[in-house]
Image (cartoon, rainbow, N blue to C red; front, side, top):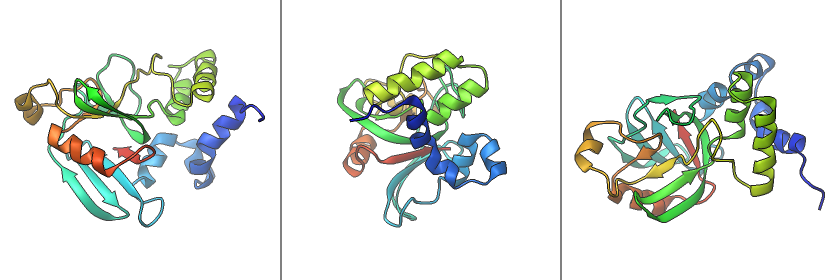
Amino acid sequence: MTPLSRRRFTLMALSAPLALLGADAARANLIETLLSRAHVPKYPDELWVLVDDREASLTVYRGNAQVERFAPISLGRGGARIQRTQGDNATPLGEFRVNRFNRQSDWHIFIGLDYPTPAHARLALEQGIYSQQDYDDYFDYYRRRGHPPQQTVLGGAIGIHGIGKGDPDIHRRFHWTQGCVAVTDAQIERLAALIDIGTRVVIR
């Protein structure tokens, strides 16, 4: 099998959304552009998840039909933003895919997301958060391991989880996580029963 080069990997990761954009949109922030279109299902019966920062809600859709809605939910103590960095306790905005489940988590169940995505890595390079070497290392790691590195300046270990050993009263009143999306233990059980590896998750 021919090795997957960083150039080819980058094209595979980014070309599909970029192919839908015009020249002006392609020059804009890629994540903002993806988010502007993310509420449209990829196909009519797609099962996908929308996390809405302003409404503090998590909604599961089948196509355009609502399947389940959880509110209020908790996000990062540092708010929600397109570009987060390690230790800022912010929840990253963007379009993600579920890539792992941990059912022995301290947070009851942890559903991992593929953050930082290639789009986040590209934005980090453009903003000077990543050096060219950081950017090259990101894609080299992703190509070899099949998932993004978690120990870069962008941070990692972002997902959706329950309260677990946390305080339910704090959960009801505050955004308390280090950047993840938190729901109750009953809600994370329901969510884990609905979605799977590869499910699209939009955080906006």
